[in-house]
Length: 88
Image 1 (cartoon, helix red, strand yellow):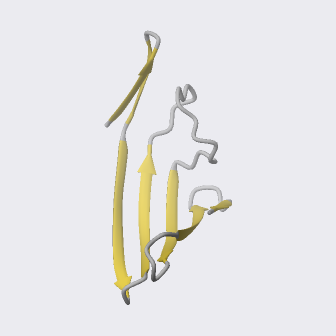
Image 2 (tube, one colour):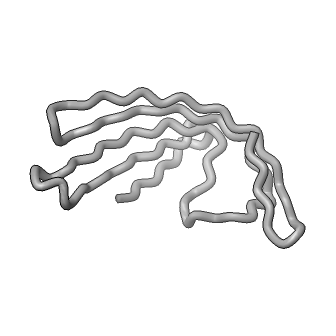
């Protein structure tokens, strides 16, 4: 259950999720997750990503050998509507 509030406004959302990750070598991490969120129309905090009530998410993170830089890519599939979103 997530409760968001700001300036005496609030919204509550039931959220369920599971994520499985696997480290591949010393520099690569891959994961897959499923998320089910009872989205309400009044979202107080928008992180500039598409709202998906049922989502399958694939991702990978690569960390350079020097550990100074990392690169992450995520593919989001809306299993309810068949739409998708990518971000890095």
